[in-house]
Structure formats: C-alpha cells, structure tokens
Amino acid sequence: MDFPDLLLLVESAQFLITQIEKHPDYQALDYQPDLTVGDAQTALSYLKCELEDNQQTSVVFKSVD
Image 1 (cartoon, helix red, strand yellow):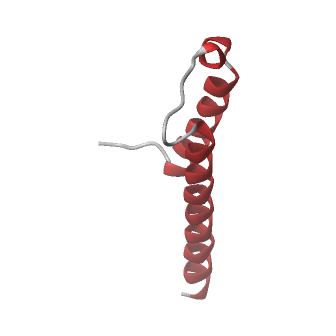
Image 2: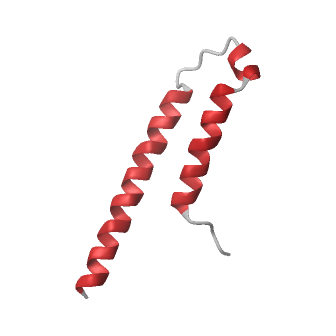
C-alpha cells in the first residue's frame, strides 16, 4: 500500500486545524477540553520539525556515502 508523504500529511493537518479553529461553528461552542486546538498545533509543529530534521540527516548520510 502506498502512503502519502508524512510531512505532507502533517502540513495538511496543520492547515485543517487552523480552519477548524477559525470556523464560526467551532468558535460558537462552549467547548473547554483539557487539550486545546493550540496543543494540537504545537504537537504537529514538533512532529514537523522532527521530520524535517530526519530528512536533512538522511540527505547528509546519502551524500557522504
């Protein structure tokens, strides 16, 4: 099974979370979860950084070989 690029999925999720946060139906909710939309955005940002670091490391190792 072919999977989409993980970095692309993370970036897509970041976009969707931003759209959810801006949506008037979401803003109208009296929704107070333990974890917030901001927490999700932060988690995805950390994941994206990790993926980018891994890709850079991979390129360095490939160019050294």
